[in-house]
Image (cartoon, rainbow, N blue to C red; front, side, top):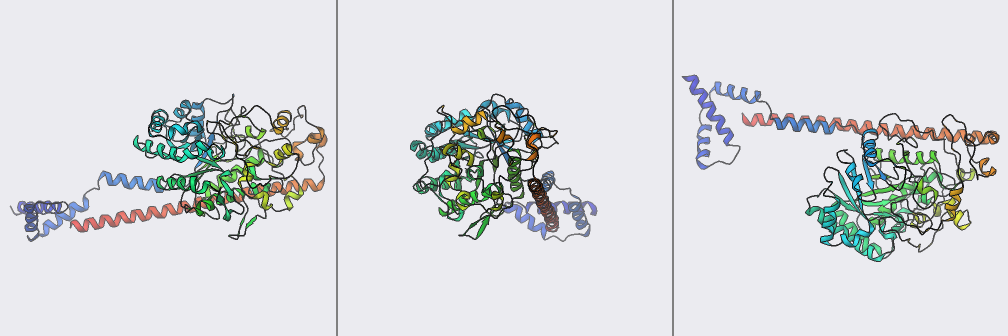
Length: 598
């Protein structure tokens, strides 16, 4: 009888404890207080302690703990590596094949499209790859209205999302370079209307932005003095950056050191060891033109009070082929530049003015596009061949896939190695971005000088489908949809006739094709392994120079790999520390709940 009464009292006390955890009626509170004032028997304490200590945690608690641990212990491969997927080629694989290849065999986790091609957008459904789609330049007037934006979302986003992980909609491409005042003034209203339409449709996670060339900058030399073009800074960029801040979307720039280098600044453009360029405003010496370009954009944003807005890189890359004889262009240089980009994205080191900041980055481009108009380089930015084999290896493959061996990069001349980058030519100004590369400028103007600096560079118009000229009137943009008037530039005419020899896998050089001059083939500036055997008799100093440079490149690559591994190890240790702290918190939380129940 006593045991039964004790159990009843224990049950009542336990019930009163549960009642104390939620709102009670006056009767329940009184009853709980009455029970709480009742003397507690020893066997009741033992029963309560045993039941509390032995009660298993809830399934939800288990799930939260396990999920948190998994998130904390994920591999520290934090690089957000994206690629621009263009389709101006007649030999490219089907979209479904491309999507499967990227998802299963590469580390690429995002793609940027230059339109909303249904076949391509649908092909990435369920792959885990995030997709940036583009609304064409010609769609901007319609998107700027409420009904037009809603109709565009219904036709181009709703049928595919969320099966396809669309992360961002780009409104046009390099609109500021079109010189079309209707498009320029309608750009920000179109971005606002499109964002409102996405939210109204329930697609709040999809961001809205628009890519810009570096032509938006009026002054960029030095980076700390950079500012937006006069007139556009307050009328266009201030409201645009305010939109980015409110919607937490990135300000997208297309940064190409390739369009700003010359023979003296190859090392600076490729981020090789070099004396660097001093910014007297900050005392920073830049050894990477890419970092200087990003800091120039940051400084321009900071002058308007928007330094907190995220910056993303919509396009950047390096071609494997250009006009014959152009210094600093080849498979080795393209691999070197993109390997540097991937290392920067993985390390999270940021830039001198934006330390420890990571950038969403899209390499240009996925394939060589043989139908693109413009100079030779425009058709040779690809990372992969049409058969999906790598043009060169930069560590993007999950499995070991052999690419054609890239020769070690060789400087164009002794003066290029000895002389530091010239400030005017190394400046990451709009003039540099709008100027052609050195050899292209030489072909067009008959001069060997680098890009010229003017006070008011003209902005070249672009097509309606979102493409504009990265290099202004002299250097067409590799973006999709660019238009052409059918006239070939001097570089095109020369590029169509001239071809370069490519070393085969076994190291033998094939015979040069027709229309290559003997002086070009036997040019002593070419690496020894890239010349016919009859010309392959380099002098001892040149051979030593070549081997020394190859050794330097190898050491640099090993240093970058060591830096990446060190950063990954540090991140892993930090995750383990947070995991330990998390479980300590759970332990003390359980102890506190136990004590409270007792």
